[in-house]
Amino acid sequence: MDPVEEIKAKLTIEEVVGQYVQLVKAGRNFKALCPFHNEKTPSFMISPDKGIAYCFGCQKGGDIFKFVQLVENVSFPESVQMLAEKAGVQLPAFSKEKQAAKKQALEINEAATLFYEEQLAKNEKQKNYLLQRGLTEQTIKDFRLGYAPDSFNETHKHLLQKGFSRLEIINSGLGGSKDTANNEIYDRFRGRIMFPITNVLGKVIAFGGRTLKQEKEEAKYLNSPDSPTYNKSLVLYALDKAKSKIRQKDKVVIVEGYMDVIASHQAGITNVVASSGTALTQEQIKLLKRYTNNFIFAFDTDEAGKTATHRALELAIASDVNVRIAQVPDGKDPDECIRQDLDLWINTIEKTNSMLEFVLSDLMQKFDLKTVQGKKQIVQEILPIIKKYPNRIEQEEYIKQIANRLSINEAVLRSELVKIKSSKTQNMKKPEEKKQNKPLSREKYLLGMLLNFPDFYELINQELVEKIFLDQGTKRFYKIIKSQYNPPRKFDIEEFLTNFEDSEKEEFHLWQLFAEEKYSRLPEESIKQEFQKIIREINKSNLAEIREKLVRDLKEAKLKGPEQYLLALNQYNQVLKLKF
Image (cartoon, rainbow, N blue to C red):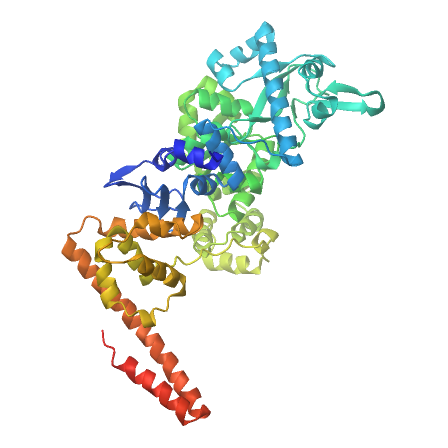
């Protein structure tokens, strides 16, 4: 069996979708709040019979693969891989060189992770360091923490014994080489607590290592370089563990360090992630927007943390996300706060500050609000930030708040705001405007109803004026349906579907699902009336268009001679007799 078909046979649409949204039974189908746009009334339909999930509000959805593509923002091959693992289906090996390199890198990272875990279990001193930091044995196991021996070659010797080549060790970032001629390599991570970094599938793609040495010349943290599996600007630490809770709570808490994340998860607050060995990037914000539009920045409160918060704010404003700032009191970082006072941490991320409150508070500590010069400096610092907001309503609200806090006339601030040139952030290409959702055409609507209620075919055959059936997108469907209808033999849906490609079948199922949701629970007489109503609307609409066309044809025929004109006039008069 084809792997894609095997996955479909083993996983139901409701099983896959149910991992992301709460399903409510609705007849033969399920309903849910759409995961792709904000809504209060469920418009997301899940059809077990048809194997599709679709939102008729934002018009997004499809089969299990398309759904995962959309909800996880991944490619089709990646969605197949994700679902194959869930279904326990073995995919054929990719022959492409790039895929082979990724597979090799994942395998070597997994081998290194197991080695580091074993080393931590054998080294009581290093394990005690983590236990003294408040971590439990279970947390250490869940996050697969390990220890890289303080040795020049112990890790890569182990990997060589496992069958990996020197080049593979170097390409993975686990080893380095100063003398390629002699094939000598050294371990990148030595004497460090190891934090495996995983992708959204939970596969280890890189490492972060914290030194246990006291020497100041050695970096406290060392991270893997970019590799076939790892691009630090595209990865968030613990997103694989946090994504479900982020979606459920509709907010994400972003911290700076690995230990901040782990301590928070251990405490039961699991919608927490960290940037992976880099300052927060635009790509990481875009990645998180798959799950929520509500961000809480909980960076350290030292100067470096404040700088990181300001930089992250600029990116968040450009990405049009809702931002709040959580500031842990007394200069603590989240990890320390959680260990000393969990309730304080919970209160901190619940009672957050707005962007304006955070920036104003910071500026009012730098400049003297009691002096004109101090107010001027605060305004000069904060207005360029306000200018970056693409939403004028937000700009106006912030202007009012600043005017109130600084006791400055609003009109003066607006005047100063106008003088500020748009920043590079403002000049960035704006996200593509949301496309207007096009409702189903009446013809598609009618055909969707027909597939739900095939007994009403005769009504279409009798009342729909085929001569003026102008919807080119559905004309082929209509012709095939008509060709298969031969009373007393009823219309056969399965036979009908054999005439179409898979993509066409999926579109057809969407029309059918739309009509099913709207009319399946109505009495037969009401359904009949709706058939007649839609047929009349199609006839009227198409009749108006054909009349316009015939008027143009009459004008052209007049120039070609009497014979052509009489023929066109006859056609026009026939159409005029039609009334609906």
